[in-house]
Length: 150
Image (cartoon, rainbow, N blue to C red; front, side):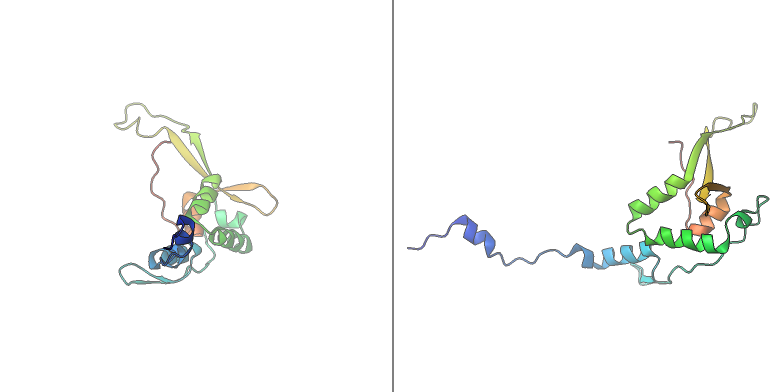
């Protein structure tokens, strides 16, 4: 009569271990986050993100304060972050939420927004330079949804 202990039975399991990092969906997400070329869920081929220096057309001329080499360095730092959460926290660290400066009476939607956002990028000497929203979006190749007041 043979008796098997429960410890022996658990050690000889025939189930495969899950390799979550090898699933197609997760490989696709990882490539997208790193800016690499990937094939979307519908089969569409998405090209890798390539850096192109941004020339700002606003009145601030943001590209004069952030040279091409610094732009490339910031872009590389962003895409070297390994997860979506790290990338969003990096971006939110560069966005400052402030109270709106001005309120107009008599407008229809005067209470629509109570905060403004300012966008900053690190300069070479350890300080931050204020840039326009378009420059910020184009540098990181992102689309920003208008955030609700938080």
